[in-house]
Length: 258
Image (cartoon, one colour):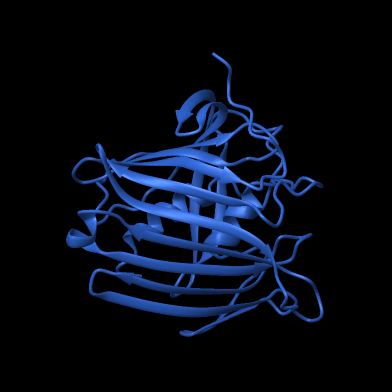
């Protein structure tokens, strides 16, 4: 994996709090019609925006129904001149197990372009992508399906300091991210102040992350389990992901009343 700066930040923000050892809740936390919008800010400037939508899919997989989830991520304003990003992602998942059937992406990050089409064969434990076939065991996701599965884990037994592992497929293979549960606290975002679960996903140092860079993620401590804010330190400055719009939710958002 070479140039994947924006997707790596989004992946860490959207996919935290999943582990093979945790239990999925019986009731799904989202529904068709949901739309969520995030802004990524660099200081006082809006660097990028991401919109994620959920729809019922007219396409079936092995005669099974599916939910279609798709996301658009793009840089904004001056950042289009510095490093233009136009990324599109989509995944089709089982509406009950939330496991992915099919994933695709089209990424344009500066002069770099990349596309991929990924099929998940869970019965035979094989992922088929443009770069070949990849055997796997257990649960493996693309970053969009990981985000939506993560919203449905049972966090009732999580203790401060617990470390979770998330496995996802991206571009050239299966990767693992370690996430530490920090605890519970209130955090303010564009839609108000919320009671949240706080996580610290591990960051791999590189061209945009320092060796000791920290990433913190806050997820609503309610039935929605929506990431409302994230803060990641860069080589120069930091990025903040902020929830700015949410509609079609299965459950109402409940900001803290001041």
